[in-house]
Image 1 (cartoon, rainbow, N blue to C red):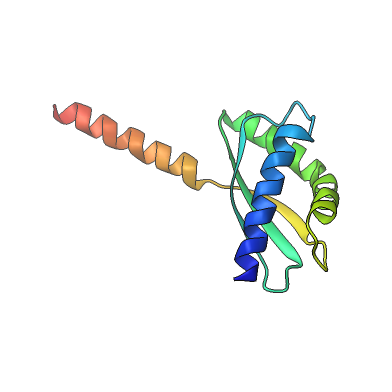
Image 2 (image 1 turned 180 degrees about the horizontal axis):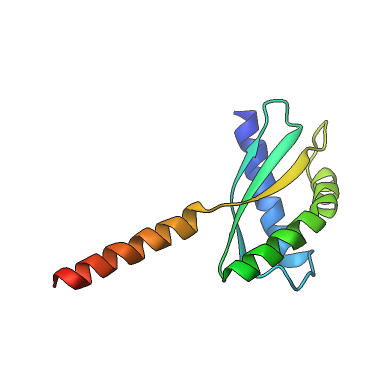
Length: 113
């Protein structure tokens, strides 16, 4: 239960940081989709999605990796945790995948009509 609460707090804080604290122009319309945190609260995988083409996705990934230390520091300041978790940003392909599936379904429906 505690792990889920910490993961949700990290998700909320990182989403806030992306809007207010990070000033990198490479970071576009990023959405934090979920956070997975280890049982010992020492490692956090932060999954994100972005609207844009593949180049924008790569640039955003590079910018987020560069901001990892800053994000980790702010999480440590904002959340009262015994250990400040190691942060790993990971691109969440599930949203892009679902959009592609929906597009294919719509194409099939259009062909059948």
